[in-house]
Image (tube, rainbow, N blue to C red):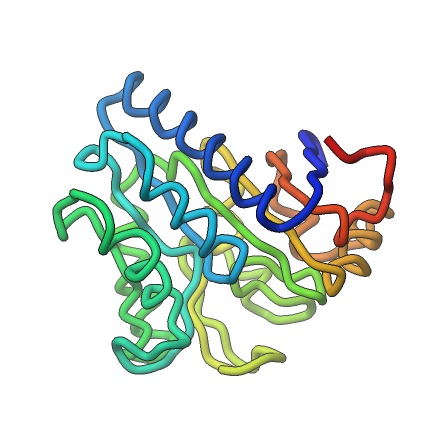
Length: 227
């Protein structure tokens, strides 16, 4: 973990991460006129995006992507884009064409191939925001799953150990090539994964390269590190 911020609780993580993400977006737009950001699902990112939506940002210069998606029908409540629509997209003044959901309803293989065309048109993603699971997975790259070793820009995921078993994810190479990676972690259920990560165990999230980490005390458990 290259740049670690340990904060009091999930709300503090969401607020600090939203502020940091907003700063990075502003810097990116100032430098190149646009910013390409990939977003995760999950409860802590949801609050972060709600806070982000209340900021004064150059919304029309930001393009939004997904780090992964679950193969459910369009508008299914468990899809990541349903959460992102509710927490961010519906709250900001941005053109629909700046939103780039994954067509996961097509199934893993077809949706991954379709999304790869979009991702491969970019030089790289400017920012990828990620979370981690209890088993150390990130996006939908799970330990021992063959998608983790797939070199494609976007990968089809089968046999995921948590429902649904079929998913689509940015490939590890796409995550590694991003301009910046931001990781949000909260809750005691993530403590074992964080301990394993700090011990250097070969978890998927340990392979994403340098990142800015926003972690709450429940996940980290080292009292002296609280900000």
